[in-house]
Length: 238
Image 1 (cartoon, rainbow, N blue to C red):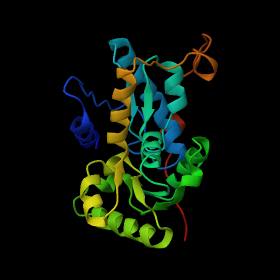
Image 2 (tube, helix red, strand yellow):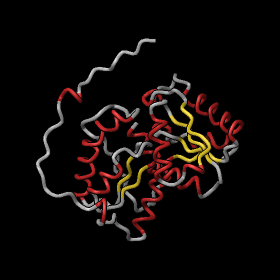
Image 3 (cartoon, rainbow, N blue to C red):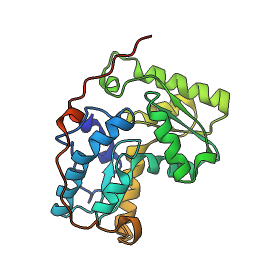
Image 4 (cartoon, rainbow, N blue to C red):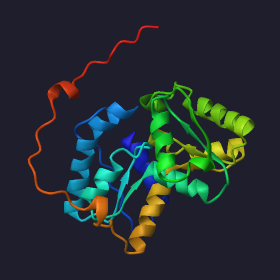
C-alpha cells in the first residue's frame, strides 16, 4: 500500500519534487478507528522527526483520518498536510455539496469530527462506509472498485452529491477511473495533499510555532506498555 501511495504522489509531483514514501517501523498494519490511530502515532512521529533532520520541505500524512496531524505540526517546522483535510478543502473549491466514501464504519466518526473541526461539515452531505477493510483494497479479488463505484452512485442518487472524496489512502489511483465511470469529480486525498504541500513550499510557508504548535517543554517520555501494542482482538458475539 505504501508503494501504491508513492505512485499516486509521484503522478502529481512536479519534476523538481522528490517523493519519499516512509512506513513506520511500529504500529498497526492499517488504521481503522481511534485505537489503531493512537498506536500509529509514535511510529509516524519518528518518521517525521527523521525526515525533518534530513531537511525535507514538507510532510504528507497518508491516512484519511489525519492521524496525529496536530502532533506532527507541533514537531515539524516544514508544512504538514493530512490527506483528509486536503481532500475536503479541494472538494469545497469545485462544488457546493460533496460526499466521502470510505472503508469501515469505525472510520466514519473520526472523519465527521474532522469535518466539523475544519468548518466543512455543512458542505458534506454524507460519509458512507463501504465495509471494505483497508488491507482488502490491495486484494485484486476483493471487488473493491465495484463496491466503491456502487456507493458513489448511491450517494449521487440519495444525497445529490456533486463530488466525491475517496476516504482512504488505499484508494489512491482509483479517482480518474471512478470519475469517468460515475460522471462527477472524484478526489484522491493523496494527490490533493501532495499538490497543496508543493504550493506551500513554493509560497515559502512553514508551520507556525505560536500557540498550539509551539515546541513542547523538555520532559521524560516513558516507553509504551507492551500490552497495548500486542493487545488481542476482542471477539464480538452476534
